[in-house]
Picture 1: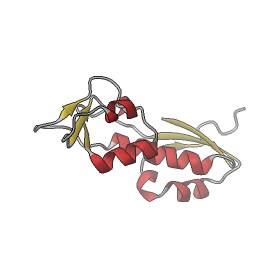
Picture 2: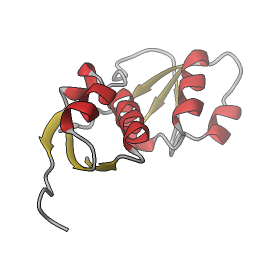
Picture 3: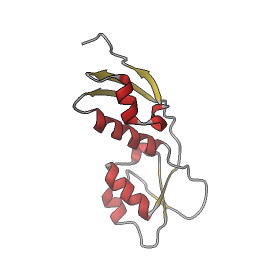
Picture 4: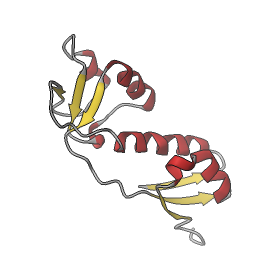
Length: 125
């Protein structure tokens, strides 16, 4: 996943990166009674899930079409799993006007382990 961050947006970008990692690390469904979502998981779909549903399965994390706040709220009501895991290789980050150390501190150590390259566009316009 490619990320371009600068002084004005790096805090928001690190938050989005942590959210993407949260989705990539959803547990894989193995067995049990669940509600299978045929397409994208949206707030509309959640609002129409049958009462009493405890667990939801989506195809993979790319089928979550919710912002972070909506998704975290949904996780309070449901156990959300994926039918198949997508391999997430990591982040290639290009920084402008911010030091790598400052960006990594904002990202956090846990998410920082997914940095595969930094300043991939250094010296390019």
